Length: 166
Image 1 (spheres, rainbow, N blue to C red):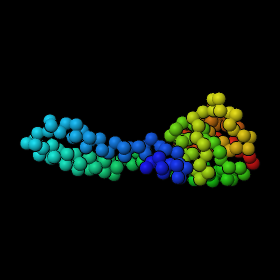
Image 2 (cartoon, rainbow, N blue to C red):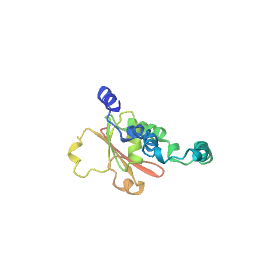
Image 3 (tube, rainbow, N blue to C red):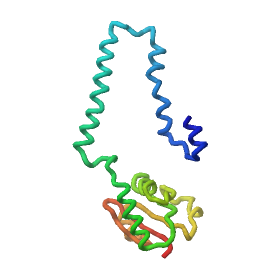
């Protein structure tokens, strides 16, 4: 089904899409060990599963509500909006590439409306970039501020170097 969706929509298959493949692994284990299952002890097993079934979401809920600084709270859309606004004020071309680590640059690439290509670095890939392509470097603000040939900006703790056509 995942393969068919990928073919019809043109979407690339992501590894997380295959997580549903593992849903029946517990049932398969029961099948393998069915002659070793002791029905007299099934109640203990059942109660422990119910406990974990309730306890796990409660712990997740507690952590989610008590801590505001988690990956799930990352303001990716807001950062992308700020970067896009700065880009639009300074450049006329579209952002084609975002270079930097997977977290800062990858999130920026994901949230920008033009969905630019994310790359960790430009080793052996410099020929891919055209002189009219917009490029954003994301990384250490102290380093980028010194070497940025375009427009520099920072949204703590990440620095951004925007290079495009004016």
